[in-house]
Length: 329
Image 1 (cartoon, rainbow, N blue to C red):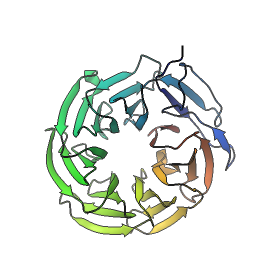
Image 2: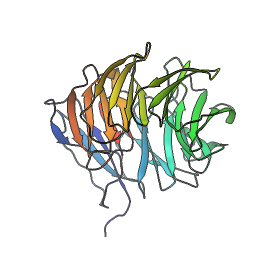
Image 3: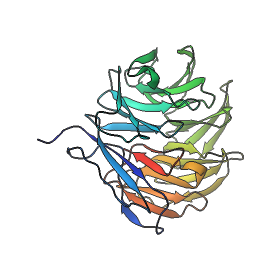
């Protein structure tokens, strides 16, 4: 009897063998068909190891690594979040299941100052705070004004910015577990990202712009016309010097985070970009799109380092902060 639950997979890659190679990749996410649990080892790159695990009952929406790179969280349409102990090997039944949302879990984010705390947001108009040391018990529930779709945790761990489908950003105090302010935007909001200092919040929009806002005054400093169509994805490199953007115009652009000049663009994709992420050290940029592969480029030149076959579009992806491990759905 086939198991109808979704598979979860993790791919560990060291370095690419040949630029431009197309190689099979394992991933964290939903298979297009049900299957039994199994463990698989593939040589994606030199010494690569992949582990396949059964997890969610429905499609997975998002993935995120914790500060230490030892735990991986995933959120799903099945209204649950699962935390996987990657350090000791993800095995069926060994993950921590976090339940409480009454709608799909659309985003999950770990505290940048703690390897144990995380938050999740959902279309049920709540943010939920969790601490893995407390098991599956929810630490706090914070009500927001709309159906939440994106979030970004401030580098000092004190504030989480949450955006909803009504283009309102709510600022949640993570210590008092309450909304301390909101800001309504007159345009479609997509992914957000804090600067390493926490003094700036970047917000991507449906007009292809990046709105640069100061914090804590929450005042607009600049609007950058970065893409010709909606800008969906954003990430900043570990050094804080470069910002990567991805949009509906199929482009990935790399920007100087200080003077906001465009350094280069990646033009080889043919479909809208959904996710961009820097690897540890900022050497590579992984791009997830509506293509059936993940493009990994050299962050310095934009040249293709390797393509990972995904078999379907990629909604979310994340590099481990400590290893060349990439998880995606």
